[in-house]
Amino acid sequence: MIFLDAAATTPVRREALEAMWPYLSGEFGNPSSHHSLGEAAAAALAEARSGVAKVLNCRAGEVTFTSGGTEADNLAVKGIALARQAAAPSLNRIVISAIEHPAVEESARYLERVHGFAVDVLPVDGDGMVSVEALRAVIGPKTAMVSIMYANNEIGTVQPIAALAAVAREHGVPFHTDAVQAAGWLTLDVRALGVDALSISGHKLGAPKGSGVLFTRGRLRVEPLVHGGGQERAKRSGTENVAGAVALSTALRLSHAEQPEQAARVSELRNQFIGRILATVPDALLTGHRKQRLPSVASFCFPGTSGESVLLELERLGVVCSSGSACAAGSDAPSPVLVALGIAPETAQTAVRFSFTSTITDAELEQAAAAVETAVGRVRNLASPQAG
Ligand code: PLP
Image 1 (cartoon, helix red, strand yellow):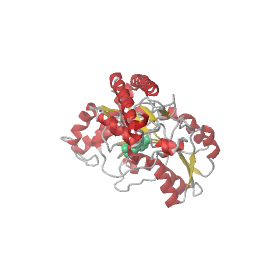
Image 2 (cartoon, helix red, strand yellow):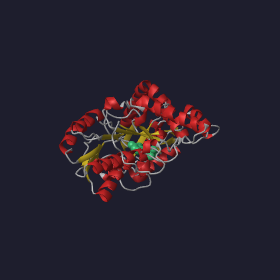
Image 3 (tube, protein in one colour):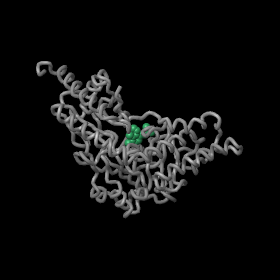
Image 4 (cartoon, protein in one colour):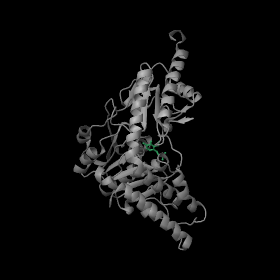
């Protein structure tokens, strides 16, 4: 099987598994316990936190471990907006982009529904790019926070985060970015990016599902969503997932070290793959930005098919991928991301996303491109046999 669904999840790296194993077995202590087992767990957690901080170029105290990307996004959007509003009730607007992951989009809608916030949604152009001018036009004295994703999970478009964050900074508004898909491929240096908050998910970069991180800058106040024993500097109560944090830190450190080489190699393979598909599959339409895109994502629409049928054919041919976001799987509605790009709903229904792990090879992608040509041809023939 050729696995081209890394944007949905990745296998746990052996190094991460080996690093976490002791904290699931012999060193099973609770980091809050005042005995040697507890202290060993607390030390491991502290080391994991420092490891993450090193990659993010931040202080260890600015790293909060969460149960994944969804929780990190919820904590950022709700936590920052509610804390800001508590300090200044006139702060009742938040800004997001039209192509956010549901973890951000639904958090914003929750604030609107339950806490009376207004949500300003920045449009994207046909490539999925948010414009700095659009943010400048909408941000104002009532804006409590801005959340714009670093790289999109369906089309791979990468936003100009440093420039967007600079606009928010000019207005003294905290800026959060969902870096779940960017992690492992793009810089996560929060000082260089100039962001105030950044989310990461472990399972997209070789750590287990259910591990995540939210960076929040210095004294930025965050209203907790989970109350209890005050762990994670009271930002996120609950006994810490020590093994998950150790695995995430290990996987993040390794992917960061490998990033320059892998990003260049996989970008090159991605370009070849895109070129092959566009050359061999009639009417194939690349979605997302041609250049400003994740090394790991190639996404297309194949008019005259249904994305789901192409996926089934591809799986028969030994290639596993996705029709878009795994989180929207099972839904018949066209992807809101593709619709936001201006793609017609009937074309959006034909979307297929190929996303690569850092170990993908040229041979695998060559085989996959041939399978795509066959699969799309078969589905189109079934749809209109006389045409074939
Ligand atoms: N944000 C983005 C951009 C994602 O792609 C995902 C997962 O697909 C998430 C957030 C949610 O992360 P998790 O699966 O760890 O909850």
